[in-house]
Image (cartoon, rainbow, N blue to C red; front, side):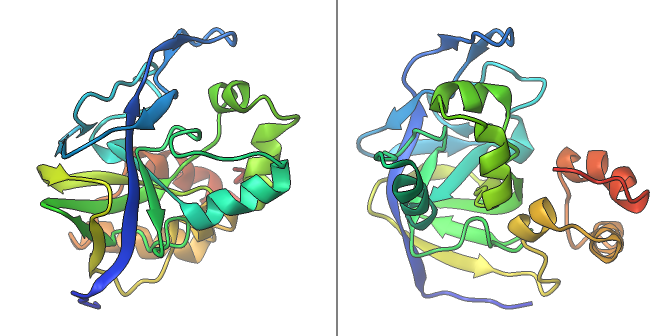
Length: 222
């Protein structure tokens, strides 16, 4: 276990739904159209106050309460696509700088303002995301790049605002990152995470339990 108290990154934007959009893919409405909010913003059990989720079967809930994406990864896509990637375009709630999102260890805790967050799982690209981006083979390209960002749960409610420092409060010793599990999960990773959950050291999201059987059977795919 590693305990750190110094600032590790900066919160560039807090984003929440601008408008609900009816998808063309038949999944109903989506809250993926997020824009930066001004001033202090509340964080509660289900995420950013004022945000909304359209497809509650596959998105949202306490284990996917907040989605964070780094400016560093957004810069990669800006260069790759030849277009700006403003905060909220990927449907993220937090745009960060100077702190790992894709490479965050599962179970890492961040302190932002009065809010305590815990990294839970990787973002899995879907048809709604592809529709929003309008880029050829977007799901495949996003998957292959592996720059997926991370979901977080809210451990302590509170307020935060743009410009707040992000402090890494705790990093588990197991070392398995959300990016590693998304792009190259192994049977050893599964066994380690299962053991940590059984011992009470980690609380895993449903994302992992749905994928464990496939990985153990050797038929995993992102």
